[in-house]
Amino acid sequence: MTATSSTPRMRCAPTEAVAGDAQLERTLQDAITRNEMFVEYQPVFRLQTGDMIGVETLLRWRHPERGVLSPSAFIPLAETSGLIVPIGEFVLEDACRVLREWRSAAMRGLSVSVNVSAAQLAYGDFVRVVRECVDEYGVDVRRLQLEITETVPFKDRQLVLKRLIELRRLGLRIVLDDFGCGYMTLQHLTTLPVDGIKIDQCFTTALPDEPRAVAVVSSMVELATRLKLSIVIEGVETPRQASWLSAYDNVCVQGCLYARPQPILREPLRIRP
Image (cartoon, rainbow, N blue to C red; front, side, top):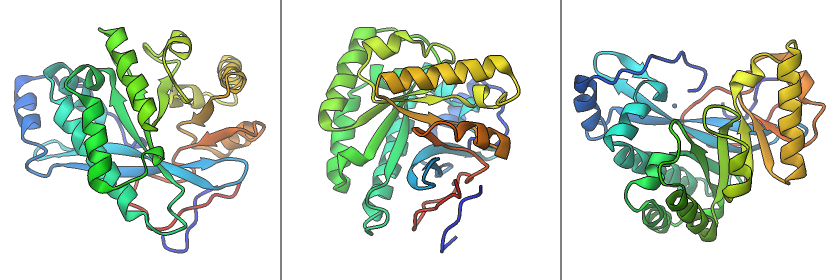
């Protein structure tokens, strides 16, 4: 089930407790200018065919004292402090750089997904930032996908809706990340302009042994199918999980069973479905 390529930066890494102290915030302010932030890319595959369809950007912080930190350790702090704006621009620019480098015919059809929080949509002029970044790197906007994450409720739902509509008009695809967790509720499927959902790994972990997890995932897949939304299952790490998911012919998968986060790819990977 592992990915293969003729030529062979983390969702699989342990998460750290959120540290919201003042010292961490001061350090975070300078992290980008000191080149401590870096991005890795985790492939996403169509399960039935084994084809790679794109990658997700995964931000990491190489902290000078605490080592490499995953987003759970600093993104909530970045959101509350407003630092999510420059950090988000850094990730977006890296994603556009990757799309520009994917000039070969084999890579040209792949997409790059960027995580965008509700706070990013609320702060500043995110639509303008996206437009300028796409123009600067000369990339096809249709290959850029935004995964909307929500660690806090939308404070200005109308503003978020307005900006998502504007982003859709630019040609970007909008996906609800971590669907079914936290504040990512069914209501968003009727009120927000979305093209797909990502089912969080907290549900995948219990497959296929936990009946309730089986029922929940099955229901989400069926709902997304009826709504004609794309479906990505995150956190697939065992052959038994993959075998159970193979019953669905319209799901895509992402997880350490297939490919770990890594630097920019030069050739598409494939899995054995």
